[in-house]
Structure formats: C-alpha cells, structure tokens
Image (cartoon, rainbow, N blue to C red; front, side, top):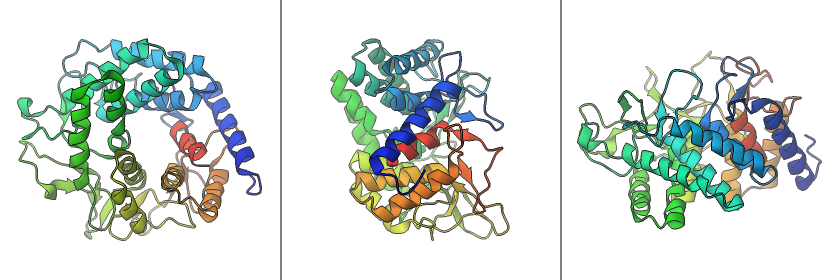
Amino acid sequence: MLLGATPRAAESSRRKSLIRWVLDYQVAPSGLCRYYRFGPYGDQESPLATAYAILLLREAYPDTALSLARGLARLQAAFAENRHVGGGVPSVANDDSRLFYSSDALVCLHAVLSLHESTGASDLLESADGFVRFVTRMTQGRHAGLLADDVGFPMQYATPDGVYQNWLVPNISMLFWDTLRQYAAKRDHEAAATLFGRGANLLRDCQSPDGCFYDHYDPGYPPVDYNRSRWRWKYVRPDGTPIAIGDNSLMSALGARRIGLQEMSERYLQWVRPVDGAAFYAYLDARTAGSGFAIGANTYYDVVCSGMYGQLLANLGRLDTAVRRGIERVAAAAQAPDGGYRWGLRPNGEFVQDNAEALVTGYWLVEAL
C-alpha cells in the first residue's frame, strides 16, 4: 500500500482486497470461516472468524453474511440441548476439542445483532437469544461450586461434559461486553441490561496501577470470595517481570471505551509505547510497556495490535497522521499478494508460523485505516 494514496482510495482498495481474500479462501464448505490461511492451523473452522467475516461482509455481501450467520446457527443448534454449553458454540467447529468460550458467544452475538440491523432477518434474533442464555449461564458458577460469588461476568469456557475453566478473562469478552446492552435494548431484556451493568462494574478492577490490563481473574478452586488482589498477568517470568499479551490488553482498552470507562482507555494510552509509532510486541512487560520477550528470544510483532491501536485512537478522536502512517507501514509489510495479512512480523521483516495469514488481523487493519 503506497503511503501517498488518499485515505479513501487506500481504504477502499484494502477492504476490497480483504473481502476478496475471505470469499476466495476462507469460507469453508460447512458455511463457516477459517481463522487462518496457511500455517499449522489453517484448516480450523472458527466461529470467532466467522463472526468477524459477517461484520466485514454485511454491507457489501449481505447474502453471504446471512449464510455465515446461519452456519453459526446450525452449529449452535447441534449443542442446544446440552445443559452445560447450550446456546454457545465450540471455539473450533471441526475438531474434538469442544471448548465453548464465553468470549466467542459475545463476538457471535455482536455479529448477528449487527446483521439483523442491516437485513431485518428475524431468525438471527433466535440465535442471539441462545448466545445470551449461554453467557448468562456462564456467570452463574456459585451453585456448582465454581465461583464463591456470582459477580456478573462469565467464566472463561465450558465443555459439553461439564468441565469448566472458572477464570474471568477480560480481553475479547470485555471488547464485546457492550453488546449485552445493545441486545437488552433490542429485546427489551431487563436481565441482560442488569448483567451488562454488573459486569461493567467488575471490569473497573481489571487494570493495573501502571495502566496495562490484567490477563484474568483467578477465583481459585475451591473458589474464594472476590478479592481485587486476585487479578493476574498472563505469567510472571522467573526474574519477577509480569508479562501481558499485546492484543489482549488492546482488546480490553477498546472494550473499556465501548462500555463507557473511557478513563481506563486513556490511562492505557498513557502507559503503552508502540514501536516506530504503531508496532506492538506480542508479549509486553506489564510494568514498562517494553518487550516482554526474554533476552535472546525470537521477538515478533503481533500485527493485529496495530489495527486495534488505530481503532482505539480513532474512537477517541486522536488518530493523527504520524500514527496512521505507522499503521500503514505495518499493513504494507504484513499484506500478502493474495490480499490477506500475515499475523506475525519479525523486526527483520520475516513472518511467523509458516507465513500464516489471519482473518481477524485483516479485519482490524481495514477498520483502522
């Protein structure tokens, strides 16, 4: 992408190329989308990727977007009667892992509600109802001994056999938490509105004093009463350095803005230190915002972070020319000849994971620019 191209022309070209990439390579015969092209996970069909494809395609290709939404509904229906995961969808549709994430349900809820606004298709609301039931059930861990308190935010995932991960994980769920408020208004659903408010209140605790967002809250097992001190980083290195994941922290910052907690987004922006204006290490030192990679490790940038950073600044009215050009440089370096975007970029210009391209990476880049 030439930096001299006008923003309108560049955006149009970039979006059209990505849409063509999705239509040509990522839509599987099942009616769902693959997250990656190339790399070791290139055959995995992902509800999360499908939801992002719906958001990308809903205006230019509404019929294809509807087909994808109905593919999600078929997958959802296959598990509808299961008392643990009914209403949700497995994170990978075509393998046996069967992990049903609350975050996936919230992304899918956002996609089907957005598509309903565009098309008026009434069956999409039935699917939305199922996603809300699943998310609501995932907040109710006390009766099963998974949470000491039902605090208004969902546990991370469940399996059809009744295995639960009881961590409370912001990132994707925080990014799409506001969708519960949209659903509540659409369906006149008081319980969803109440849940939105309780979860938003809890999420006020998920930011560190420095400004980075914690990775998760660990209730323990057996669970103990809620205590703000139990918010955790992704991991802590042997030398005591707390490590955060770049894209997870950016999703939380974007979510804070959508929820109405703008002061948290502002504090994050005061903390973060992108490289060359718009590149982000995949692993961050949660105290300094510098590289979280160990000395001598094979460092890389997570390309999706650049798009999310641009979107956050745009949402706050602060996306300036210098940052835009930084994002353009990242996008140009990561874009493949087929129209997709490699998700990992090394400082020397090489790519990671067999040049794998990711649908979500492309989505955030074209949204930001």
